[in-house]
Image (cartoon, rainbow, N blue to C red; front, side):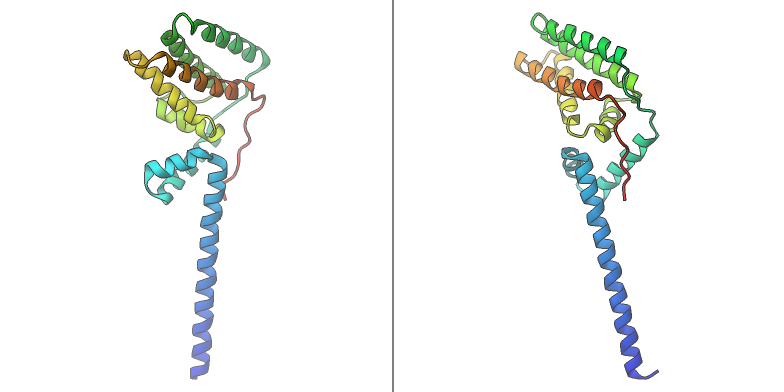
Length: 188
């Protein structure tokens, strides 16, 4: 081989390496963009808590794959009516017993999730599962649950309890008013 051929081969190898690197980089950016779009504020929370972008994105993809395997189903009309009536009763109880109402709201959210098909293992897993279908309100769920736990320990004030009810209400609305199972988005 003459020197010209070797230079040409070297240039081709470099060009192929650059194109492969750019393709990989584009793929990573597309993955990040899709996850950010799908998970919204939950994406930022997980990236911050994990401290590593790759690990956080892997965790979010794992959540999405786990969720695809769950038999999540919509509530039928009767179930929605029953749960809405129960919510109104919990909400009306707030004036006389704010702590009890928040505790009842926490339990009611759990029941709605269970009927919809979400596993009821532990709170963190429940929040992770909910984050796939309801990423915009999962932070409300976390905040409300923390307030409910504090209230159960004798901490918190009426304003905190009011905020918990507002947070629970936003998740309750998401869980009961969706007439269909959220679409399953594929990760690229």
